[in-house]
Image 1 (cartoon, one colour):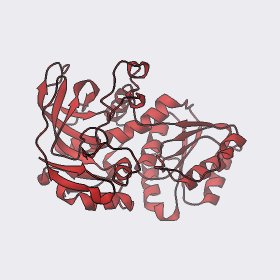
Image 2 (cartoon, rainbow, N blue to C red; image 1 turned 60 degrees about the vertical axis):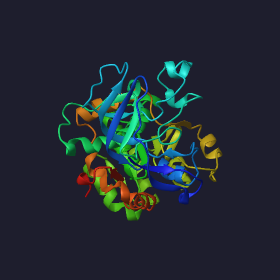
Image 3 (cartoon, rainbow, N blue to C red; image 1 turned 90 degrees about the horizontal axis):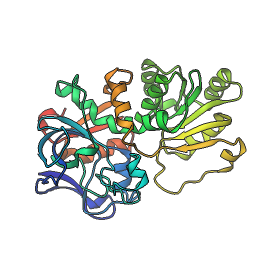
Image 4 (cartoon, rainbow, N blue to C red; image 1 turned 135 degrees about the horizontal axis):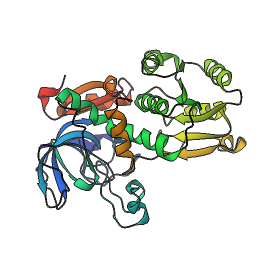
Length: 349
């Protein structure tokens, strides 16, 4: 099978290679990948900004169909359409694993970083950490957006499981990329008043967010200040950085009220210059949200089943595996929301 392999340090240590098809172990599913989404974390892995165990097939966001099972796979069957929690290999016995917080297990291994991942024709995954698509997703076009379920679930974990959001809270989300767009929508499902902040070059993205439910959109620091303090004179109740850019975090600290909550969704990818006292000054509660928990996925799938969150506008690019460099470059240069790599060229466009 074809697979995108990280085999050495640096961007030059990544190539499309022919590998044997994987064989499922006890309790695993063999899945034919319909679509694998390129994540910013994949870029961090390519640039050695995230630990990988080489050689490894990259990718952790996907949707695919079960083609083989082995042993006790609960009630999964061949033909089921599935997605998987990335940190699906863990000790299974520690207190964190018992709570479903497998991402935080000391011994965790994630697909795409420690174990072969999704940017391939096939992969194997544990059934216990896999999830079916809702039955309403009947066609291939219906199923493709579910390749973005994992990043949406990352947002859902932060907004639903890591912080308290009260109806009417003023929330400022920084960054109108896909994570910021998802955050805007998910905060709205909790009854918040959402102000989405970007830059002048983000006007089309901001307009999309407005059409998807954001209460206000702003593209300058002055407009942000006016919007936040007009709505909430002491500052935003909650700020959310969806970029992983230090300047964005600084913007959040300028907009937040004393004793406010900051939700960090963006990954910085290395050491960054930042003044921690800006958190200290207002006694802000800083809450990082890393990936997902087992409990996050049913919440996420319920939001999607009830059509409270829309993913389809963010499927910006579809390419065959052979054009992976184009997809990665588009993500690096922020030319797309999400790029999908489709092993079956028939579905690329």
